[in-house]
Image 1 (cartoon, one colour):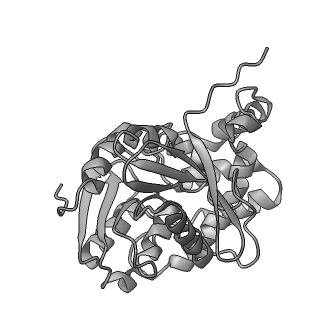
Image 2 (cartoon, rainbow, N blue to C red):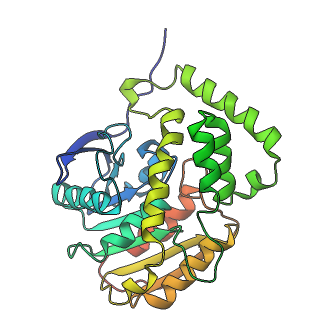
Length: 297
């Protein structure tokens, strides 16, 4: 007999401006807070972070379009569509505060230019290209070539090494690729995942990175655009993350007029993921999003 773990969340959906349905998971009660996942992720990857914040907030964790509870990417996918999805989520839930991880942080950052109802925004390591810093997208051509060949394991490795996870960078590709092939097969055959739990298969998540790379390309060279952003911003990173991610945060800290910069010791790019240390990330998000007084690290 298969035993499916009971959900600790409810689900709902909103409709974006182009008619795309965006589904989300919800837990907790209190002021609304939206968590936007990054690349090779879906709502399932931020559930520990959501749970850690659910004692103080009504937390909404959408599957960004093309994944899980949400409908396909559609025509002309790009950062504008993703901002419109966030706009629909805010209107449908009443939430005014947003946390974004990686590609999700790019969306939240862009939204500060367009959504006047945003109150506070926390950004964890947006892969924003900065003049004079290494490109955050240098790994993308290899990923795209491997994806075109149907070698999902190799594409996954290219993405993970490109985002600078220290444990991945130290391991040679000839070790990593077979491990990832096994992980994809195991995930596909897993009895733990089911439609009842709303989880997105790993092979779908690997393919979705193509669209997040497009977002990063569209956001390249835009850092100067954020000089007049009025929302209160928290910039979060780990001291184990790659140099281009730290460079982006430092550049934003020098541009955004109402930003606080925090570096968490011992953490890397996926700290907010269920596989990282989301409780530590929640520890800085909770005081930032609570109350109306200016946040100070």
